[in-house]
Length: 305
Image 1 (cartoon, rainbow, N blue to C red):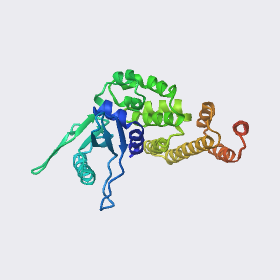
Image 2 (cartoon, one colour):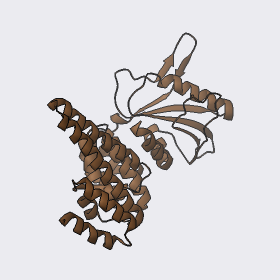
Image 3 (cartoon, rainbow, N blue to C red):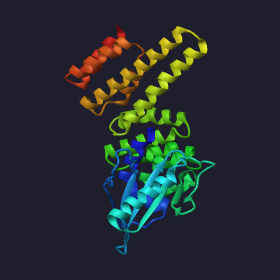
Image 4 (cartoon, helix red, strand yellow):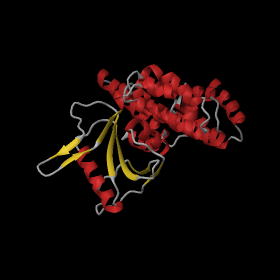
């Protein structure tokens, strides 16, 4: 569930780069199609249905499903999606799966006694990060951690996005998505990106996923510590850590909404505060302060006291 929102934002911003470079489909222009209505409210929706036009003017519909890990029901769902869009648009339709992590049960077809259905499987983990990075396609940088040799290019990909001419909002989205997807490989990579780029990432619509991941990690760490020690103190500490994490995030988001951009030094200072009462007081100050300088001044007073 962590990866649904980030995947949708990635497809919205970078669908043509994904189709050209990863899927191998020539694209002159593309449009996202609206979801096809279904008769049942429980029916699933595909991640994206894209009408693609090539340089000759030929059109087809590409159904693009993103999977962080393989699900054995994917082939049947793709078959359902394909039928829905063909019935509505009566155009040639190709179903594709962008798969982030390897699986022993992965397949590129569905077959039973009556049906044989093949789809395009794009195993992102088999691509070479070195090639993608040197091609300089910024939209694909968030996927580098999932590829072969991806960890080697994490810092360079971060810098390429940060120093690019993209808007601050686009940088925030790409960096946030890269941090989220890196968690499929290593939580350390995710923490590294967040530590360096939180001040920008706060502007991304996908940042709420980071908040949820961090909150759950803090909560789980506290609960685990409590179980290992077999003490009530462990559970209380886990609860406190979760509250501290949530309070820090609320304070940082409020500062960013009121005084953006907030210097990274202030973000780091907030992250180091371990007193819940101070964080609560600073949150009230962030809401009422007339300027960032006023907040910084009062923050210094709170920490000294």
